[in-house]
Length: 118
Image 1 (cartoon, one colour):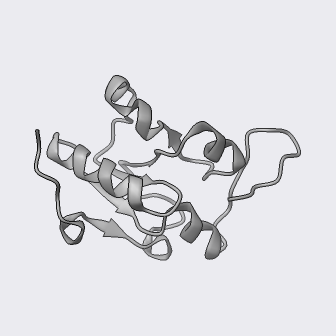
Image 2 (image 1 turned 90 degrees about the horizontal axis):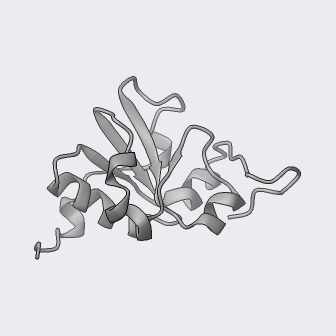
């Protein structure tokens, strides 16, 4: 069993400090559940729900750095700590998709004509 990482030791970035075009060699990993994803997500994000992560580690994008996002930053902080403890270079997107939407970053939804509602 691993010791929890204190929140102040989890690398993080505010949505407004994340470049609109992700740096080369990086990827955005959205760990929200399916219904949250369908409601609205970043177009370039890869969806891998936190609840399915242990069984789907081979689906984590190959990237030099992973930016991990959820709805408000809590789940993504836990996933970030887990990934960093297991060899990935991950950074939590603090305030999550709520912060993303609040600064006007674009969102897409999966259903035709469905509004993006976080």
